[in-house]
Length: 567
Ligand code: NOJ
Image 1: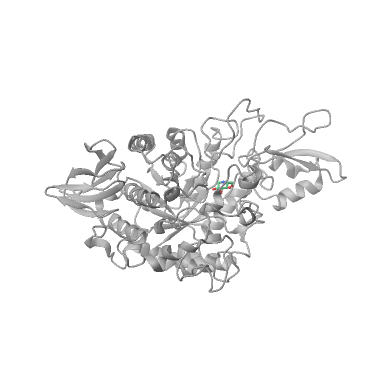
Image 2: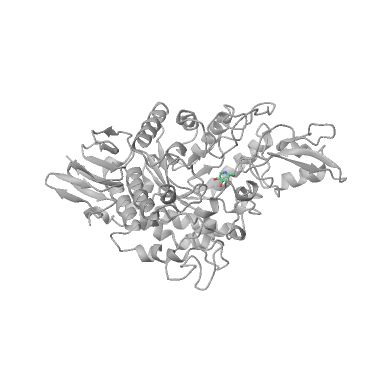
């Protein structure tokens, strides 16, 4: 078995060293925790902040640099917390503000940074401003903080424009006036319970400046900015006209998204982030049409990182991957920002399942596919990603090789997009099933024994738990641990964006990374379905599957990535 290497054991103080490093975010590995599904300390079936806190040592030992927490704020949970009623409060289902403070402090003690989610495009319909705006009726000045408009048609029965919600159906909902008559409409690019803020209004801007400071004062190291490309809409909210259905991963320019005016907001946010010591960062969730448009969000006076959704959406095909890698690096060079890499998150089918299916099905699929093949490719894809220059995102459970749960019954699903799209899209619950930690029966250590989990965990997850994988050198967990330890220890895998492609057979990607001290890391990924023989370029460091040596050559099995040190 060649999946191990001598440098697996990291010095005990390595995470703290990394956290102190300047420009820590340029090559950070950032682990996404989805609080509902990570660890449940109080046994109510829903993950919580004390649960996350208890598992921080696991994340330190895994070898990540920072943790991004999806929303844990006060919320009616119409969209799993992305509908925030109070941006300064922790929802009781997740704990208290004191729990958040303890979590941040513990993480820092362990050398981990904490990035929190910020949801500025829309609030919950239960937010105090929105509720007051409804109560006060059409004359309420609070309505100007959202997008309220009269309807079209003889009695205002037609929505103000033709925009659609990303979750399906119209992007407008009609209100009722305080006297019970039908009233104006309000805009929501997502669920009706998520009214969009009007970012032209100074009170909205000031409120978010205060919210940023509220969390920065509590010590957070940065913000992942939800729908960062959506805050500013085209003036006059013009009709879309003929267009493809609205998707989270939209491909074309629209009046709803990626308007130039949004950048002024992030320039102001950057000055706020820079007021604080220790390099606090902003990460844009911006589903833009091209990597070049994404680069605009990370110009030197704007945010630090943006998710690379073009990479996430790429199929497991050598040509497609090489193209997106080159385009991503190229796009970021002029602005000097690191490229990011991501394979999975809480909004898409896990990559172990995407790669188990034929290419071209998109990022929302409900077919289990060939699981063995999917896992094999997922392991190879992870090693490839972790060798690329820049910062990498790991979604909770991908280090266990978890597949999506594709057969959840309708009655347990909670994703609003599943119901609004009449079950045709929106299979996000499948990647949100709680993590298996230990034991042979559900909830597999997610919560107390005999407890439950808000989404049911499959029986076969007993074999995928942290406990089942820890110490097994063939496991996906140990592959991630070894890769992250190696990445941290090897200077060629840090900082600079150098990457030099090497000649390789068809369907094989091979590149070198060189450190300032001249040491070299070679990464070769066989993305074909058959073994390929390549010259052994140096000392084998790590591989996603067992390899065989053939004299001066190495046989890379199908769908396998290997790292070598050379020079
Ligand atoms: C993107 C988030 O990742 C997703 O989960 C959410 O539904 C939408 N934004 C709306 O907030």
